Structure formats: C-alpha cells, structure tokens
Image (cartoon, rainbow, N blue to C red):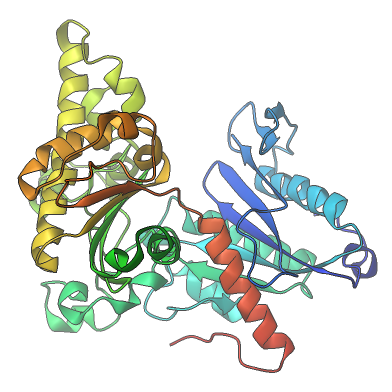
Length: 420
C-alpha cells in the first residue's frame, strides 16, 4: 500500500475510529467520531467496496450511487483498502485517526473480548480460518496489510463469537469423545456483534420486556437465532462453525452428518468439494436453483412447472427451519416475551416475517399487517401475547464502541483486552 508519512497521516487533533467489515468480495467501512461520549451511532462517513474479486468492482459512499473503480488485479483487496484509506485521509480534517477496528468472525477459545492485534494474535486468528472461510481470511488479510503498512496505528479485533461467551456449558459442549473437545472443539455461536447491539437497543425501545425471554432473528445472507435472557446469550443456533443452524442463502444450516459421510464415501466428494457445496451452493440457492435471495424467489412462486415448485419449496423450507428453531429456543427459555427480526432479510422482507409469525400463531403472536409492511419497530398487534419487533442492526457502531473503550484504556495505562 502507498501511504504517506506518519506525521502527515495522523495529525494530532481530534479522534476518529475506522471500522472495517471484510468479506470475500466486499469491504464495508465506517468512520466514527470518538471525540464524543457516548459515541454517536451514526458514522461521519461510511460505504462499501463491492465486487472486489470480480470484473466490475464498485466503490460507493452511503447516499451516493456506487461507481466503477479500477483495482490492481494482482492485489485487488489491497487496492480496495487503499481506496478506503484515501477516503479517510480526505475526511480527517486535522483530526487524529485513533485506530482501526475489524469485525473478525471467529475468536475461538482464546478471545472472548476485543483485543489489540499484533503478530502473535494474528497467527492465532489464522488457525480459525477453516471454521469461517467466508470471512476470516479476508479480515485477517486486511489486518496484515495494515500492520505492514502502518505498524504504529493500533488495530483492534472484535469477534462475532465473543457475545456468546455467556453460553452455559450445556450449550457449548458437543456430544463427542471428551478428549476431542478439550482443544476447543465446541459450539461458539456467531453474529455476536449484531446481538451485542440488540442488547443495547432493545431495552431503549422495549424497556424491561427486553430483559425477559427474548429471541433475536438475525436473517441475512447468513442467518442465526439467539435466545437472550437478561440481555445475555443463553442459546444460539450456530455452533462450531457458521454452517450450523438455520438454512441460509447459500449455506445448508444444520445437516445430518450421515449425509456428509454418504457424499464422501459413495459420491466420492473431496473435502474441498464438500466445503464449496456446503458454503456456496446450498441453502435457498441450492434448493431453488434460482437465487439465494428470498425477494427473488417470492417473485417465482407463481411460475409454472419446476421453477415455481422449487421456489415454493425453498421458501417453505427456509421458513420451516426458522419456525422450528424459534420453537426450540422458546422451550429453552421457558416461554417468550419478545421476538425481534434484524439484518437484511429480517429488517426488510415483510413476507418472511409474516410467514414465520403466522406459523407461530400458537404462541399467541398476532401481526399488525400494516406495521409489518412498513417495517415498523413494533409489528405485533396491541393484544398480541408476544411483542414482535424489527430492529435495524448496527454492528459497525458496536465494534467502534468496543474499540474506543480499548483505545481509551491503552491511553490511560490500563490493560487492553488480552486473551483468556
């Protein structure tokens, strides 16, 4: 990366924190003003570089139409980071960049709190790449590039697994021989930054009800549910890897392990072929043969022949798995007070929420159809036994808040989070 001298890069007035959320083909970025306490939830600047691994990448700031951008084909990820870096420089305005915080999907058994990343931590995190291959390697590539380019700039990793550190042992343990589980083979849970944000936002909107029996449904391209009690994770659908639990856009969700044995022994699939199938060719896309997007599939439900039949089956299975797991988590909680939908599908797809809640009518859920169509904060009727809400997630802000606290601790001589 081509970076100017440190003195030019980081003037000494003000404080900004940059959040990077790196995926296989995109990088979301958000710049927060850490000079305020509490940290504002709206970033001063944010956007996304998309299509990094494709022929037509784009760069767009929120509120501005994405534009085509040329990336060095030899190192497209580094080139995308350079574009973001240049945008940060243009917005410093004499203020100091306090540091960069990264959403890292897997912290394993070592990291259950935000941590300052150095070469040792980076090496640890690389060992978890097989558990989160869609996200982990790309976040670590960004961290490594920035460590090389500007080692004096603090970088903090915030983990999607960390929020689930409160899971009881019975939710963490796998039914495998004990000796295999000791090195860290257990259920971790994911989407923790999203659920962490909800633990802040839900009491503000729903008061004491949010401290009761809550199920949060993070439905996006990846999907999971989390059961919360007193705002703490007590059960979740994802486990050892981000393949577990709900059916997703291109991922299977929970799958009989006998199927994998069959595919290896009879169909002779290699582990690499299995990985590609499980992560990239299954879920809504695999069942429908059309798309991984519920909004696309619903447009094909009325089609004649196999196309319509497969679209209907894919959506029915998607909803069924959500309903089944909500029922299971409600049983673990001993009832339900609040059901909340979040993330891209959860926040914006009223027909998914309607189908899920209709199937859960036996719990006493009743939807206000107008509110549901409007993606309102509360979409249940006044007489619904269970309150149903829609809460936009804010993973970038929760990561920035954690990082700002870590940077403040470091500046006062207090210890920044260390491994367990």
